[in-house]
Amino acid sequence: MAKLIFITGGVRSGKSRFAEKRAASFRTEKSTLHYIACGQASDVEMEARISCHQQDREKAIAPWQTVECPKDVGSAASQLEANAVVLLDCVTTLLSNELFLQEDWSDAIFQEQTKQKIQCDIEKLNESSEALVIVSNELGHEPLEGELVSVYARLLGEIHQWIVSEADEAYLIEMGQPQVMKGDGIT
Image (cartoon, rainbow, N blue to C red; front, side, top):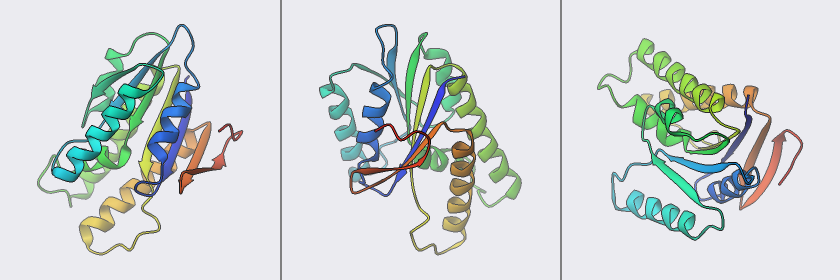
């Protein structure tokens, strides 16, 4: 089973930058770096953020093979090379993409199926990689209003808890600084 690392933090906290460095630290002569990008350019701001992330990867010392995969991330497992080091960015976006595939996101059975699908997809990636680094946003400190936001935050929190229970390492990034939440604290 691959080494599993979970990295979370607020918006623009530096979590993706830290995740890229952490993933690159697992790279050997035999391994390749794969970036599974879940973002979709739904507006100008998101388009700019995606472009910024792409430019950062292009400038990186280690070469990234990017897989644009806004949903069904488990399908990317078949595209991974042997000894792959995988960065999945990000669960927050992935949950949005999966949850809003169906018009009636409020159906409790669909919500549970969506959560289980994401967990299954993460397991597929983990089984197919040497190391899997997962990025997500921390929403626990944000005010939550409305049924949709509450459902989304609950599902995201449950997914986070499951990932951390499986993870070898977990980090909370604040102001660009990693705080070790689980594991041996390699930064």
